[in-house]
Image 1 (cartoon, each protein chain N blue to C red):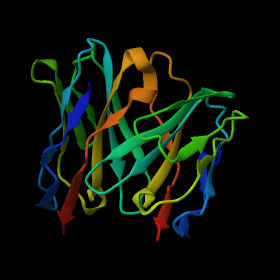
Image 2 (cartoon, each protein chain N blue to C red):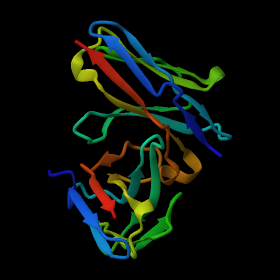
Image 3 (cartoon, chains in turn orange, blue):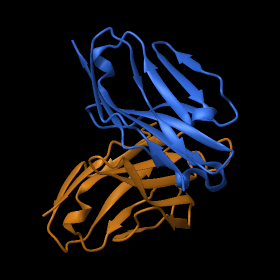
Image 4 (tube, rainbow over the protein chains, first blue to last red):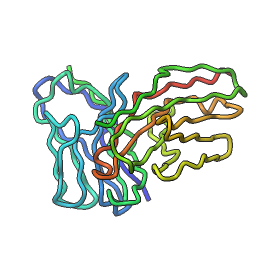
Length: 115
Length: 116
């Protein structure tokens, strides 16, 4: 199993550009999520999905869109990049959000810089 | 609202010393889960432990041990005989059961440096 994969590893965008961060998992996990990690702030949830066709907002969803057309893939779209979106982005998956809660498996991260 | 506080921003110890990382949480739920994750310099997040609120037994895994105390809302992590490979940022996280994983709240992390 490759686990959770993310592409690209690094990206530089200009303000106003759009792009999609890719996330895929091969563990047949129902639950997937996107976090951003900023210095001194831990990880904050952007969007999550409890299964194909179902998505919902997390703590910091503004400026981001997601979709979940398959169990395996959960892309994160930046609609119009802003410098405030400079961050490290992590995708994660877990078997489900039902009890007992399992740990989340994280991808290697995407470091995004918006100039 | 749930909250996780890791008051120690950075800790440095000499190799072979013991070190404890503090985690204090706030929640209104009686049923919840607590987690610890490790983020080594390479950047990935590695799961270390999960504990539910009904299981207050302390846990030991090799040089790692965890002390869960509901009375003080703490879930502290101790590394015994630290090694250079333990250098990393460590995150404590809390999930309230009613909402599942989507309410996983992370602390701000403690950067641990082990000096050889």
